Amino acid sequence: MMAILLISVFVLGYLAIAFEHPLQLNKAASALITGVLCWTVYILHNHEKDVVSDELLHHLGEIASILFFLLGAMTIVELIDSHNGFDIITEKIKTTSKRRLLLMVTALTFFLSALLDNLTTAIVMTSLCAKILHQKEDRLWFAGMIVIAANAGGAWSPLGDVTTTMLWIGGQITALNIMKELILPSIVVCLLPALIVSYRFRGQRFAAVPKSTCTAREKKEGKIILFSGVGFLVFVPAFKTLTHLPPFMGILLALGFMWLITTIVHKGKDIQTLERYTVARALQKVDTPSILFFLGILLAVAALQSFGLLKELAALLSVTLKNDYTIGTSLGLLSAIVDNVPLVAAAQGMYSLSDYPTDHHFWEFLALTTGTGGSAIIIGSAAGVAVMGIERIRFMWYLKKISVLALVGFVGGIAIFLLQLQFSQS
Image (cartoon, rainbow, N blue to C red; front, side, top):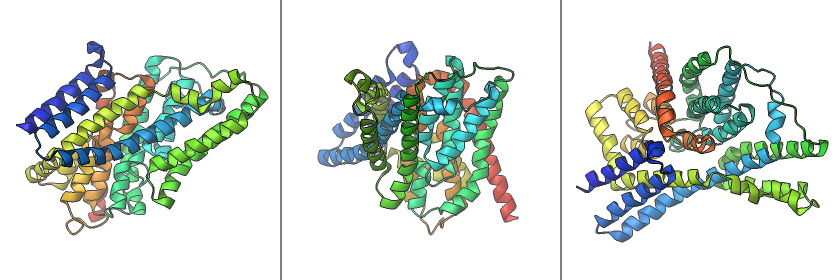
């Protein structure tokens, strides 16, 4: 009975988020209500209240690490933007073809997300496109492609997506092998939607980016902040690898250093000028409702996980489907609705390394599907949620325009993976 009630609350909350526009209710409100109600249902039907409270605090630690990472990355990007740092990049773009720009942005997002991670890359690239494109509809299509490219780029790198990182740390995959096996399928996941969307923009042009009107000193300051910001974002995965501390610690350290640098750069300026460039001002401009929305969604999913519903679902799929690739595909599609992290964690718990040894094709396939399946729905991945907040993308718009494209890429990537496997075994 409790399971049905919990699922009902979750589904109703999801519908409220999906129909945010007709209901005229901010998605953050729906997500927060859903998250808290899910835990309320769980604790009221559980005799061990202390155990549930401990579980909640455990999940909150994991959720907070994602939220602080998101907050830190978005603040650094806002700092770069307030210093006109992106103008330095946009001035280098000579093309005025929307089609060519889309392919450039997609390729850059794909490879950057493997180096940084898909969340940070999505934030940076969406902010960059907002500086170049002035038509809202164009920016939405570009943002949709950025989500797909960021998730596809993150899937083939042990640093790019949290689920690939989990499998790497868990010993299910090795770094070089996953890159070798998933690079081609991930390219297809990204390339197929990019070619379809680029066809939509054939012959269309955008206004050339006007030359910056900044003074020589302002340009110099912009360069310092741009290179410092991007440098620190690249530093975060290296910091994680060296210290084994979670990524949010690296991004908070980066933000602290950015605070120090902006203080030094603007030392001696009048208060009015200083206010435009401070970290405090950048924090005010960060989309807080999106962060609260993400908190609500992750709390709701954590309640389902604590109750054991996700593990039961993964076990049910395993018993019912009895095929590695069908199970992997189902988990990938499911990751568009619930967070892919607990799904991969459930799979790691269900299948031992004696059943599927390190670098077994099942783990590689799981990394591909759970890493890219989240693109099918805007709130199916951290990158999607961040982009949704920056560009104010409506849930239903994405579902109508981008979801089918994401699924085309998803199916194409799976087909290439299976073809690769066929050739390697023959």
